[in-house]
Image 1 (cartoon, rainbow, N blue to C red):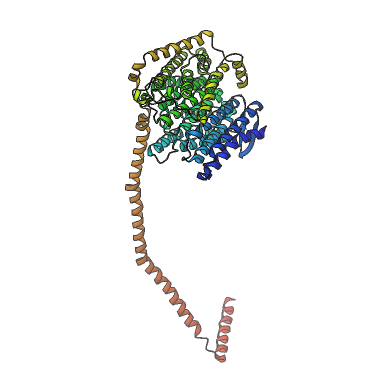
Image 2 (image 1 turned 120 degrees about the vertical axis):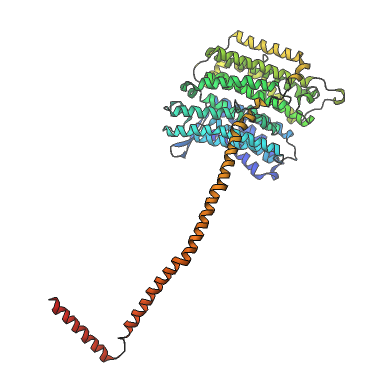
Length: 610
């Protein structure tokens, strides 16, 4: 079974790397290879979800590499691989033969493989490496059409924002190592203060940044520049939910800190409300869905903060099916109609009935209409919020009501009859497009069963932990009635929806980020550059000029003295040599006289010494 776990993460990473490296020569075969790999990974995910294998290998001194599949990660690997397979199948038709298909499908597999590694990681080194690969591949996928400068800027903005928040994970890892831990995620709640506070803060910042929660939400708006399959995968079951998954995984850490849980819960609740309002104000379908992603993930974050791991997990799984379906339909309309602006999508649902019906299922589920999956899943997590705080429950319920507003708004636009001049007969979508839409629509309905007994209790047992209270009948009824009533009001007031189509610029979060962070950093960089040019460079130039002058003075003064001393020594040596040569005449009687003189002097010295 451990071999299956290694294969689960290695298969998409290896095949994705090969496709990306080979490039254009493999374009013809890339879609089939990618879809086949995703389906094989789905089979492996189902196998390990039942087997719960655990593997470990040496990596660094005291910091091993560990992977494991338990209840939470088992549900996640199945969700990730299922959505990946559906999205890649859709991409076969959406990414045409003229595109760099091998690079695209290779990066998509790498992206999915990094997410699988993230959810199965049990140690910090593996988590950090997978986290980095996921961020790098998301940058490459968002900027897939890199020749467009705007898409490149969008990829850079998304990457830099998430990278800034990712520093929190490095802070947490450093604090864990400093506290003497082995790097195991399971040991993080047991760290001693003050290290535990640093670990908690770092994890929260990294998770909120990756999941586009306040105040980091704006990067998800820029990520909409990527291809539609990228948006569908990134927003549903991979990168954007990675932060929420990490918070659900480390819920014991949040609970033990005392302050982490409430902070996370309220951040999620406020994000659900404010980003829901941003979604209501959008005129672009993909931007509406992006803002709704932030809002819906806010419910998962709320669940992690209140300890509702079961409800948060059910919300995550249901949201993966709903949001991937909604983005794929939006991508199909963008490809066939050439627009994603809501006013220009009149009649889109009527023109492509399969896309229209499946989008309706996704939108109604997003609105919380019974008996679809997000209606029930949201109530499961809100039941725990009600036990924790009535105010938190009310804010969460308000976010759910706002979900009905933007969902019904999107439906109203796409189902309105198109103007006579723009009417076209219904055009069938390719099978590769229709099949994943139908499968995901069925999942949106079928997943409702997971939020009711006995399946909910079974999911709770699989996830482990303490038993959580289930929603009472009146909670299901209240949220369902509110969703239906609000949706009906929005539909009836449809002609007035254009008044809601205003540009909020995502609460001006990006403007605030530029004002508070980017511009000060750029000013500091400019000041440092000026200091470098005007002070350091001049100091270096002055030092160089002084060194040259010193060298010239040394050459003219010191060198002359040194040369004179050397020449004096040499002259003295020559003089002594000449004196030493004088007795060397070659005359034997002179040598005898010199020897007699020397012995005479020696005898005198000996007499005098005694």
